[in-house]
Image (cartoon, rainbow, N blue to C red):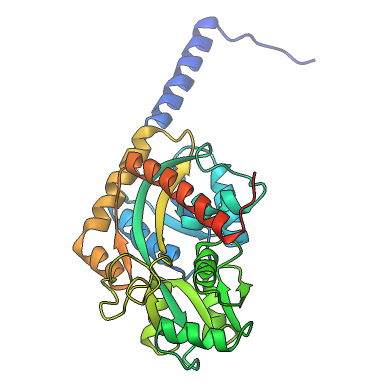
Amino acid sequence: MKTFYLLPSAFCVSLAAGAALYCAAAAAQPYPSRPVRIVVPQAAGGGVDIMARSVAQKLTESWGQQVIVDNRPGANGIIGIEAVAKAKPDGYTLSAAFTSVLTINPHVYKSLPYDTFRDFAPISQTVTNTIVLIVHPSLPVKSVKELVALGRSRPGQLDYGSFGVGNMTHLAGELLRVETGLRMVHVPYKGETPALTELIGGQVALLFAVSSAAAPHIRAGRARLLATGGEKRATAWPDTPTMIEAGFPKVQVTGWNGFLAPAGTPPEIIQMVYRDSARHLAAADLRDRLSALGAEPAGTTPEQFAAFLRSETEKWLRVSKAAGIYQSQ
């Protein structure tokens, strides 16, 4: 026969109070008190990955906690960014997101498992990326005008790659096609790294790419750089003309990366990640390293990044409609 004992009420109160104090102490632990994960919705080796790993290393050193980069490529960034949208908003899951996944996907997919403005808390725009127009070295062209002339002489025979349907690199190719009247074939890939690999292998003739990822191939002679997509010449490529200088002013494309957290993440954590990442991006060693690759550090405030996201969303809405790939939600 079992014997049951009733705990004295005073002891129960004491036990409850102790548990409450323990929970309060756990909740009061300074952030971060364990490893932080930065989800990159692209394959390793791409421009977003390079930036995220550079900052993650610095944050690991200053926080005394491991900051891990978790690459989750696929579906034009949708797989990785969805995981962040569904993560617990405690600051231990962040994202290094980019132009297409946040401000273009909403216009080119009929439905998405996330909403840029509902599901995320902007932290900071980390860098502005130079976009480059590159071709396979075997292509007999050394300028954009020569490329266009070749394309017109070979209608339907030039293949251009992209990082995925609806990706910024896809829209850049569409802008070039619309502005020049070229008949080109679009070949989408599952991300940045496979698209560059295919261009280097000669499977596609041309590609708009993020400078930081394309730079090693350009410098090694595996890809030929024709132009950059910004308003002025890129620091990384001072001798290369812009698309404006090349005679195609409407084909301007600039990329960017930024840090986000799941919506509902405490404001004090948002501010801490912003302050520390911006400080590291402004440091000479990291700034110079990224600039040499064509990624200019930004380090904007959460409020500035939120406003920027809205303006970029409106811009790419206009571009997607002009390119004929807009899909209403």
